[in-house]
Image 1 (cartoon, rainbow, N blue to C red):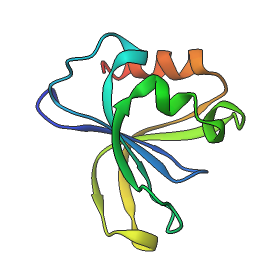
Image 2: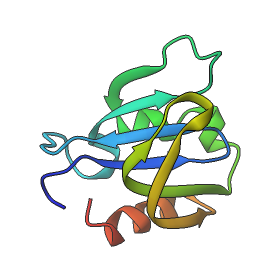
Image 3: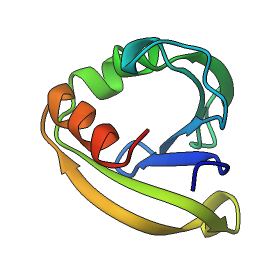
Image 4: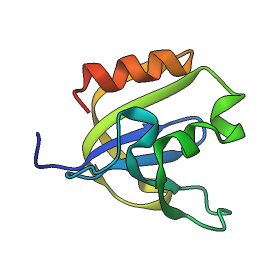
Length: 106
């Protein structure tokens, strides 16, 4: 699994965070990730940023709990987007999110 991009889907807000294979950032908050807002009204649907920047966005920070699915493969796009989740968790706090990343060995 080391050579594959790891992806997390925040189901309620339909956001995806991609963890590239080679991460030059620090631990957790400083990870370089690609963030995608999958909602059709999104102005900037995909951007490269630090993981901490994504987690500080109001949609995440003020709307816990989040159902977060970890996946490698998805089929379809738009409304037919169907990830094949390897693990699904309800995250109540950012600390639980860090624990999830740690359990996934990200």
